Image (tube, rainbow, N blue to C red; front, side):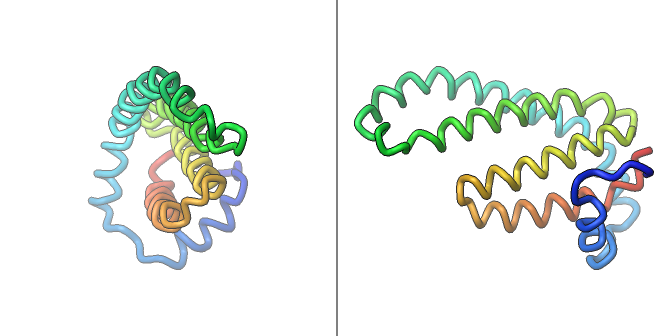
Length: 146
């Protein structure tokens, strides 16, 4: 683990060293299902993205009076982040299945992106719960990827 990602050392100090460790069986289970969860997430996210793009035409017409106030920015932030999530999950599938560090790195970037999107959209509850659980799980399984 020579390479260090942005904030990785600081977050590892919290989520790996200070919180309770998962049992080995749980870590193994999470590592085994991680690529399949990423693939399912990519497929469902892609379907959701298609529906959202089709529905975007309706949103634009239905909210024509509110565009001047910038209320559609959340829609576009959501669309962009969903597209990035889908791409990250697709790229992560093979490295996760092969237990390569690159797969873990992609999940880490996915989680960082999630935190940033939650901050931008002021989703404080999602930020706290999702950020905490996501980083805790990630740092518990980090050692399984080389």
